[in-house]
Image (cartoon, rainbow, N blue to C red; front, side, top):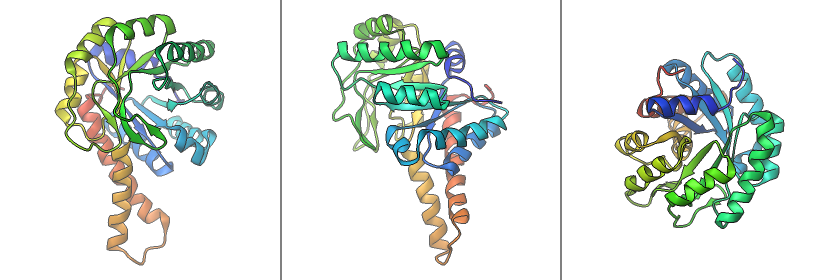
Length: 282
């Protein structure tokens, strides 16, 4: 089937209390792994790229890979811009065929975040493209994204933000972090419950790489409908290649060692989909 938007898949997840896995990819093999995992588990899936990934390969190249996979897939596949850092990049992603975009104004003051997000929503709406935003600031560092120590989402501000922007989904800061955790994360589930009561749109969890399965499931029980995984996919792909080259030091065919990385990513994605509870939800 063709690429779909995230709108229906996230609303269905919210209604039935599971989450859709959203997986960041860096190359063709990782995209193949994500879609293959979704097909094997009959799960809806979101494939996403960050601005630094896009800068490396280009929006059209990543879109073309995922669109080709989606065209032959039997499950819903969405293509999402993760942490879009400007109005221009969000607009370009939509022009190239992305079916969902995030605009991340969380590093700005509330009024500027609202202004930027509302502008992207107004641009995306005629194209029926859902927009994700972030309020509060998810800490940690990944790619060029540096959230520092982070900052929690205020439930009252979340209600105002959603009402004034018309955003489709909201990434919340409840103690998660991008990249690799330095210690054991402590999630503010009470805050998540308050946000869930305050807004009537799907909530998104960033920084899930490194969280326990129990933590992820508890977040889903309290309103999270989309869970992002990035760092651990990169680690899995790299570990697969390293293991292959260690066992075959004379290997020179990229298909061989890249295939090993691809298989590691597929198995990890399937594990994460089961934690999200999205298997057999396509």
